[in-house]
Image (cartoon, rainbow, N blue to C red; front, side, top):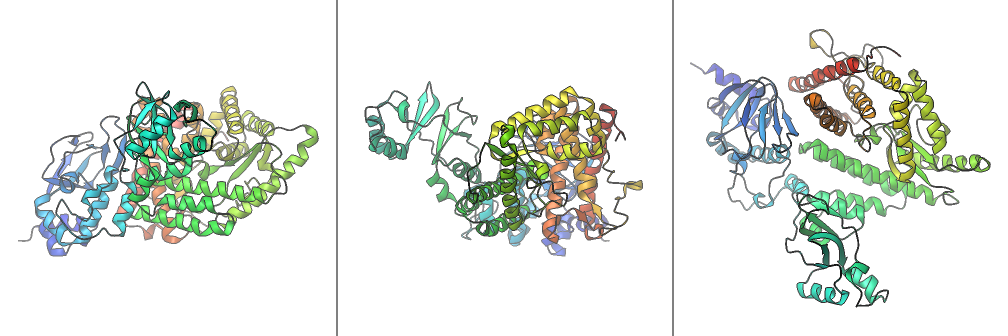
Length: 639
């Protein structure tokens, strides 16, 4: 008699990678060895440093939270069809994370002894699990394992996907630090650097890094005759030292070197200059480790002197995004890298536009990214939202100054359009005089929005209050930011109106948890992922961040992480919101890349059952968040 339970297990496993890559007979044989286990909410499946089990896991129903034990921060949330607990299979090591049932869950325990020969026989299965292991643990498979599967030797060179994964390997660094005190003479430093064959000397005070001297500094400052060879280290060193934690990845190191225009990074115990140095990273070390990664794109951006040179680079960024999603790399890291590259494109466009102006800027100014770009969430090429703020000038110069910056903004928005960013249909762009003002005029406008909040004022403030500096004078932005917080504190009723505006976004589901789709128009019968799922989260995060006066954090998921710290009693909800934001953003980007559009509207019949389940999983979090918002601000339909 056929094993009906094994058949049902095989049927479920066969719908998900990597098991869908196995021949049916092998899949059924594996399923017959699987153990099914029920875990109530909050039950621990395994803990950090626990001895490895003889099986790994697949989620059949429910969700499993993977957390860092030291901080209890959520690393990943595994839904139906996800695999986890791969460390015993991949590295024969103790677990590095805690795995806890986020809700009632049913798991399949897959025996390693039975599965391993199948994975070795089917290379594509092993490749998938290597990538899954890298992304789920947020620590890519170590370099010495490349070309190997589960510790078995192989002479096969790393493939393309493995090369991409190395972008996220820990950066190689030298633990042999050559250092001296700040009073050491330059001549002695040069001799010691020559003796040790190093290109940099770390300057320390009481064991802590306070400066650095490189061979370039010796050339530019001593050999040039600006300082004598008897000068002390403190006279020519670069200070403060740019420090990072030793967990820095190759990609992060390249971005840091490129962004800062330096050749060496100092790694310390906690990533700050207030702890002892543990290593040094040179540009040469990093470039030897990997050849082609985001830093190459960054270098190309900074070298671009014409807009047409940026367009292919912008296409390269889009391809990089697609590669990262295909590898299932952590969304936070993907978002940060892509946003950094997009921001660099904006900066370069501004520099190109400034070079085309007849005269230099008359007063300091700042270019502000608004909306999704201001939140570092504009991964796809959607439309522009930006503004410009400039320093106050006498009344006699006001008109000429505004004309100058409006013309500059026109050149910038035109060039951004050329490299792939559509014009904003509502003209919420700095090229529109209504979005180009002096700092005093912007303060006046903010005061008007906050003190007399109607539907239009709430809408405009919701877009504007996510502003982020892309280029220019940081002092102007800080002054504007302080004014926003001060004005909101002065008119607290504004938060109620803003919360009511956030609650205007309709629920994602209707009766029987069915998706609410568009009833008419171009997107009839499609699901509006932005309006019904993402906006409720971003709008709520904005209201709560304003109420807590949270500065310098614009990303929605990072805002929720900060809120979890500030409100321990609501920490679980806020962390769920952070996860939901990343999951929905990732889903939208995947849909946008698949259909070559913004990913906003989704044809539900094109989704698999598992995709629909994962979407619906975020909806309860959205409802709970909107309930909290309504109760806290007594907000419902005030606008």
